[in-house]
Amino acid sequence: MELTSVLNQSLTYISSFALKCAADLDISGRIQAYGRPMPLNELARSIPISPEKDMMLGRLMALLVQKEVFAQDEAGYMLTPVSKLLLTEHSNMGAFARYITQPPFTKVMCAMSEWFKEGATGSTVYMMANDGKPSWDLFKENPELGKLFNEAMTSRCKQQMRDFVKSYPHIFDGLNSLVDVGGNTGTAVKIIAEAFPLLRCTVLDLPHVVAEANLEDDSFNVVAGNMLEKIPPAEAFLIKNVLHDWRDEDCVGILKRCKEAIKPRKDGSKVIIVDIIQDFKNNNPKATETGHLFDILMMSCHGSKERNKQEWHEIILGAGYSGYKIHPTQLGVDCVMELYP
Image (cartoon, rainbow, N blue to C red):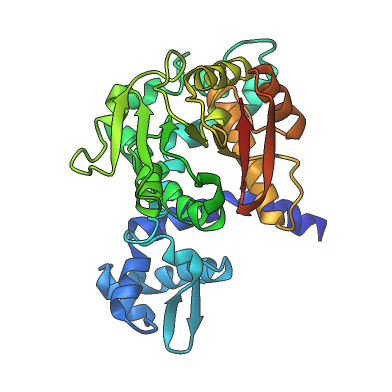
């Protein structure tokens, strides 16, 4: 059994690339369009691939069925809740699978052991593997990858925010204004604005990021700026899956900027953090494992980390907040924290 475990964990990366392949070939979309269980030969012809590769496609599908990405019966292949998330009109999580398996990231993972042996250094694994360049420079040099990054973040955000506004509507009670700090192209605030039409929403991000926002959508405002320097005023601030990209001192600085920008409100203004808490107890081993995987990704690419409850406590109080509340997680790998000035 131990040998099988080592073999399995050594080969797990193949599952990531099998999922990427399914996204690249739009297998979910083809099965959905077929409208009923889809036989292998019909799937192969729809891609299309050469008939001599039909059996190879069947072997790829066998792995994906075993991983519960797809289901199969005698009539053919069917969608599962997992593969439905790969569909463009749902969450388009295929974009995340394609993004995270790009060569710059696989190159970084291959360099991790050399980075550990380097000795004391302020560089990250990414910088060591990429001639000393920080990870954020990648998007400047490769705009297409930057576009895929935006798609990947949007894909994760869609389902996450739908669950958020459904599970935590009370968090938004009575609020008149909200700024999504580091909100990318506005996916989160668009979903919030649709659920709470009286709430004035704004997305803050760097100029080249918000330039990709849908400016024809008047459900939210756009502000181009640097969250480390200044944040526009509002009664509430949303910081979703942003702080894990930054070191502790930067997180304290971002939260201080939010506190300075908070508009006083009778029923209480707040900062809402959506992020991973490493030691938050849940009954989902897959969520716990995913948190550890994200932690290694943050360490390798940004020199940052996912944090446990004590680390979050120190950052929040270090930024001068009077208190905070952690809500029971209903967002899979992420938790929700409300901070009070």
